[in-house]
Amino acid sequence: FRGRGRGRGRGADRDGGRDLLPPEKDYYESLEESLQGGVTVVQVREKNADSAEFLEVATKSKEICDRYNVPILINDRVDIALAIGAHGVHVGQTDMGVAQVRAFLPKDAIIGVSCNNEEHVRKAIKDGADYVGIGAVYGTQTKKLKEPIIGVRGVGSRLAVLDGTNIKAVAIGGIKSTNLLRTLHGSVSSTNHALDGVAVVSDIVGSQEPRLAAGKLLRILRDFRADPPPAIISSLELPAERVIVDKVAEVMSTVRSINPLVHQITNIVVTTQSANITMALGGSPIMATDHEEMEDLSRISNSLLINIGTMRSDELLNTFQVSVIKGNAGELAALADSTEVLTKGVDSLGSGFKDPVGFVRALAKKERCVVAMTGPVDYISDGTTVIAIKNGDEIMGKFTGSGCIIGSSIATYCGAICAQSESESGKLVNGDMLLGAVAGILALTVAAELAVKREDVKGPGTFLPALIDTLWTLQPGTVQSLAQVEVFA
Ligand code: 3NM
Ligand code: MG
Image 1 (cartoon, helix red, strand yellow):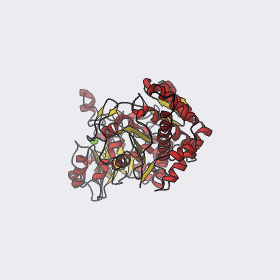
Image 2: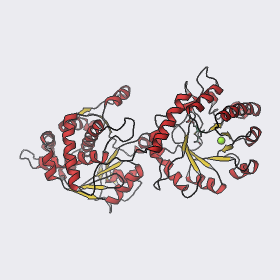
Image 3: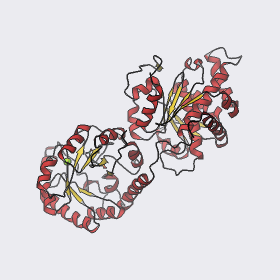
Image 4: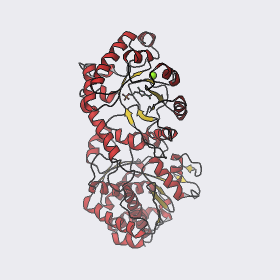
């Protein structure tokens, strides 16, 4: 392996293991510590070792794993697995096939296979694999990838192929304690098929303290199993329009008392008006975009708005968990790969979807977050409930950035709810984001109706400052009496 890989300088797979150890860290010590931390299965992956070295590493590793009663799998090499009496073998798509591997090994051997796409998973079922490794979920330095990164939003469709089988599934590739919760949450199929575990290399092997690194991962995994954070925490008792409107009124007061910090990364065209809208609602905007400030800001802000006017959102959505996705019909259609509505610039063409209620509900379920679709009627869903808001005025379409300020408004209310929420920090969804999205849209659209009627408003130019003034003095009771909300349970 060493000769073929490194010698010719092509196709060289990284060790994917021992080469990741921190300087001075002993491999076997690291392995033992990771087992103490709670690793439940070990795979020996030696991409550049010759057979003698591989055999030695596998033999010693098995001795250690045996002491912890943890099964050990060998990557690719059936002969090594047989030689040391390993519990099984893991193969890639270009290795020996699962059925052939099975023929060599004892009957109860565990055989796993790496799957990048749905076809691979179908083949794994047919070949009789015990588990599949789905990936790469994220980018990784550990292995030179031959197949595309699927992103956390790609795992669910692979899992769905396993429905009705008892084949286990783990996700792999760039999984770390910092993204594990998001990975578990995002990797659920529309049929509710979830991961059985995750496979991790660098976050454990690269750690000075693999016991702590593994322990942290295990804790997140167990917490998720015991108490999966719902895509949405909704306190709305449905179907009751009145309850929603009353809750919105409550949130409006909360914003003014809590004064949430709302970090907004937004288009230069709308920065000022977004900041002013947030202030008028009772929040504190931070419009920083500097790379260096991001980490510090993430510690103090109550919400983060990322306003992208383009369709490159896949990358973002694959990287972290959003609480709310807001867009017009065209933008959301693009996200859903639907051709029912086309976008032209920032304006949606046509009136939208035949079944907007069904569309937002399905998209929210798929993306596992709240989805808000703005338009003449706004539709907000958590994947189950859909709330339609009929307030607003067509003047909102007559100036630039009306969608952007709705985003600011949603982020302000969601920030207040997060700040007030007592749920444990670090969870994906901190409070009722459905309520935050509804409050954000309702406050803004009711204010728009009031502002446009003012005598001093002659058009879009005078409307915007009037809107800010109206929001500034907007009373919860006014919103309660003017709200036109409909609930689709
Ligand atoms: N297989 P890390 S990704 C060994 O996509 C391996 O099949 C992958 O290492 C696949 O946790 C990968 O350090 C590397 O990213 C995983
Ligand atoms: Mg392989």
